[in-house]
Image 1 (cartoon, rainbow, N blue to C red):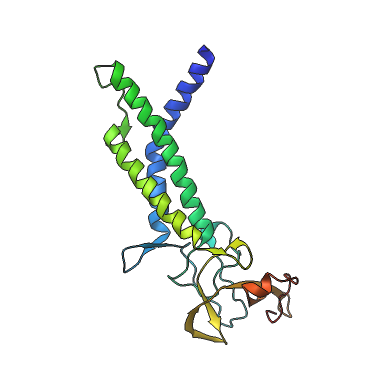
Image 2: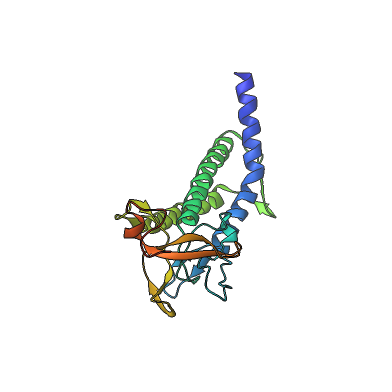
Amino acid sequence: SGTSDIVKQKILLALIELYPKLHSWVDWFIHSQSTLSSDGTRNYRWKGRINTNVDHKRLLVNTLASGLDDYPRAEIPSRFEQHVDLLSWIVKSCDVMIKVNNILTKHIQHHKQYTANDAWQFQFGTGTLTEELLKEHQLKYTSLREEVSNKISKHWSTSINAYVDTGLHDVKGSKSKNYITNKVVVRCGADKQGRDPIDGDASIEKVGGQNRLNPEGAC
């Protein structure tokens, strides 16, 4: 109907306006929250986790960039961390960009077929968003989605049937021994003054047991 066509046209115009901004935002998001390894691959972790806990009563370092400030992460912030929620957001961002890209590509192809002029072209930054550029973006997002999805699959824990972060944890009280282990941080409560939280850690096996609120040996 005529009303439906008008709505579709408004949505298309909105996507045309939003696409360059979305592309820039996703590109910034990916590069600002990742670290390039020596082998050329990327590790994806929320940045800004700095361990300032002098007395070490608090194991859980806040992760402000994630929006889940006190969500349990690795005990020792490091470049070896990878965060499942960040990986999931990247996959979702790629899905959105691939879908919008497909819509705009079809729009360009349709107008190129029926118009002899450049009326189908629209701005992308200081240039023009062409079918070739959209194809380049499509390949990039498809490749990135596959790469990150493969990373997510490696975060699955069969012992607790859940996806978990990876990172460094303290072993036998020695924070210099950078072991990578499957542990989670448990918030035990506050100190005697009721101010600073006191944290402990426990293996995934213990957390996966019956007493999940206070795993044996954590607090």
